[in-house]
Length: 213
Length: 329
Image (tube, each protein chain N blue to C red):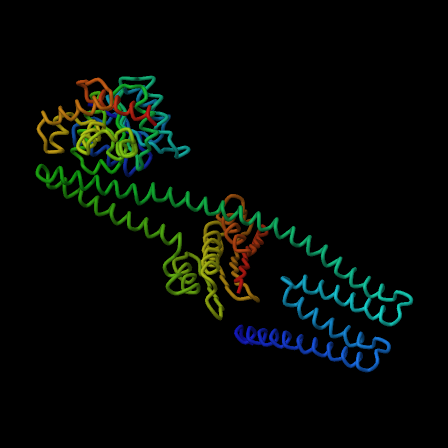
């Protein structure tokens, strides 16, 4: 797997490169701002771009803007946004085109190396990885989720993070069959047709949450 | 006289005035009775009533008036009425009170105009210094957020990442794991250092613990150029003034060390009336510009406290940065 990293702080850029290389992910580019990211991706055509939101020159959201540009120009390249803060708005913008291959994680998540690498692989393969904090941002505040049981809310949050039914079952110590039942119930309560693909479920859920905002 | 003694004296004075007002009223009544009993000739009690009336009215007004100006203006009006009273009682004739009244009116008219101008200028000054203070606070907060984001927060992420990598490598490659752990320890140390520096930039601990002199001396100890520190304060200024004084010294010193190529720097702090004066002097090449830099922020900080900052830095030096910070005591 080939990756491009965009992170302006050398300390974190070097650390990320080492982390990915240790885990058999080839780093074909490491840049420090949004324009350089777009160029590197267009040149290298990596499987995934791992992008910090706040970069020079304005230190606002240029990483995200560059990522949105890339979503349009090279839809096949997966994008994993990493940041020191999460904003629901940014997640919505990333997910707006309704396709998978996007992730949005707090930088903290790199500490759990295995889980982080797994998220990188999942996103690169067209799945999603949303930080639990992003998910909490959506799920915690919506009145229309009132119909869900506490257990279903848990399942929904894990679904939104990008986990498969097996992953959810493992996290909640349930059988896969029980999770399938919860998922069917959630989708039904939210008025969404059931679907096999993990990221589609997330997108559907987020689209629903977004439209009810 | 201490503040307490002054308050007590004022209270006694007020009580005396209130008591004597009643005495004066009694006297007025008394002379009226005598006049009535004495066959009601020409109405002479008016000569007692006029001065006592003036005394009673001005005592009442002295209590009622909310400012020095109001009290004085009120007294001028009372004196004018008193003079008109004398003129009326003395059989009228040519209206001589017009002259002293005109003088009083002129004096207070002029006073009112200057006061108005002064208060307009003051309003303007306060509006500006308040906007400056808000801007200074905003800039400061942004700087802190940036420092946290790029500094300690990033280092903690790196720390966690290194620990994670070490954890992953522990079974497979212990030497590599050890490398990651060493990196992690370095990142922890660096994060602590960043947080300490940040905290010092907000409010240096030594300033809170030991006061201005020790804090300013600490600033000078690591400088590449000899720094003399002379602090003469009888008592500790209010905390806001103390912090501002510290940052005047810190910013002045940083400025001199960075740009001036000075061979010595003098920092002096002393009291002048009810203000703390901080002066940073260097014998460097001068030509200091205030635009955009730390000195601009410093000016906002000083003016927010109603103080003033003066920067004199001719080309070729020397440079003097002086802040006057009122203590409002």
